[in-house]
Image 1 (cartoon, one colour):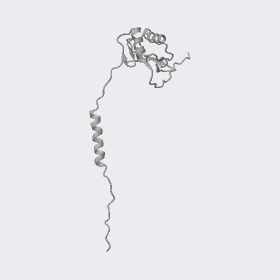
Image 2 (tube, helix red, strand yellow):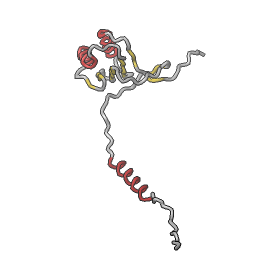
Image 3 (cartoon, one colour):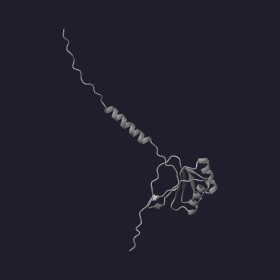
Image 4 (spheres, helix red, strand yellow):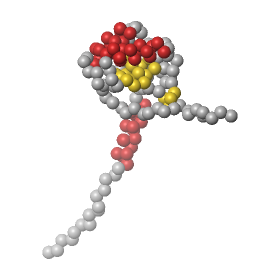
Length: 145
């Protein structure tokens, strides 16, 4: 006896409900996301025509000085702008390590004295890799008419 085989329909998965759910989740996450604005020192960097892009290094000391002369060491604000406070903060952060880069980022309107304080601390502690950050500026034309 011969049985007739039933024609089977090809199986397919309907992706429309899955796509709808993904879009709903995307909208949900976009609506519920909160954006926090961290308070940091506002720094306007001085310009240099021969600026080099520094590589992103993990181990380094970042000294940020705003226009008022307030210091931040690796994002931590200092209680005052005294040299000794800056020195203690750097020592506490690095211990005996002196081979890591010491990067000074100062606002263009910062007093020269605040930058000298930061450089002096680097010299006293024996840092050999001192860097000052700038932003790339417009090249000046040296020709005179």
